[in-house]
Image 1 (spheres, rainbow, N blue to C red):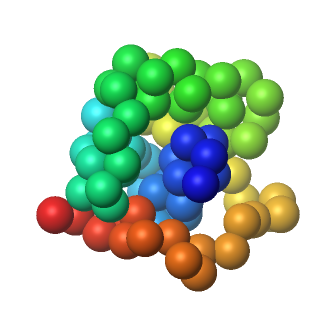
Image 2: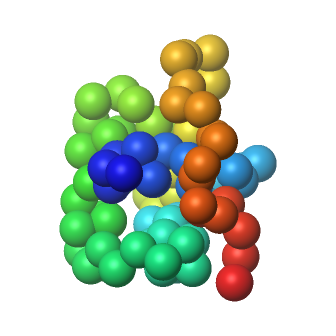
Length: 81
């Protein structure tokens, strides 16, 4: 699965704002080995393209009211390990 889709699934699995380091940690728990910097850059790119919302200087959230990628088969991207 693409990193962008994996990040969106992590955000969808959390109710509130999520910091990029928390996104990276959730991806690691799901068995992905994306470098931390690439997760941060991809998160910034998703925000620039309007696919996720920025809550504060260091937190992002999923967008609401948009087409969402189904969570089925997410590989546990929302769980905490």
